[in-house]
Picture 1 (tube, one colour):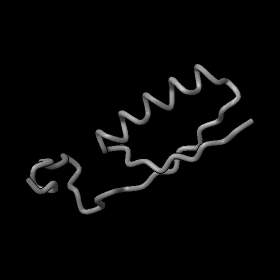
Picture 2 (cartoon, one colour; picture 1 turned 180 degrees about the horizontal axis):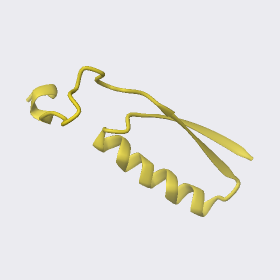
Picture 3 (cartoon, one colour; picture 1 turned 60 degrees about the vertical axis):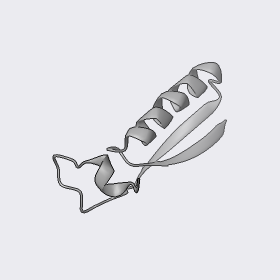
Picture 4 (cartoon, helix red, strand yellow; picture 1 turned 90 degrees about the horizontal axis):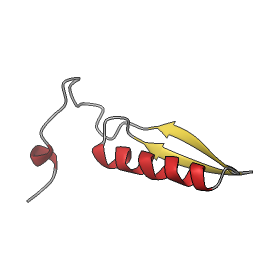
Length: 58
């Protein structure tokens, strides 16, 4: 069995896209195990979230 470790922020929309790709990978290859490793991209972000425009330069 192959294990893939994915470091992911649970609140990141781009990480969520990666989650759906990983689910599809598991369905196509049942011999793959995904190990999720939590990582906060911005620990100072309030619980209600923030505006992406504040963190991404134009």
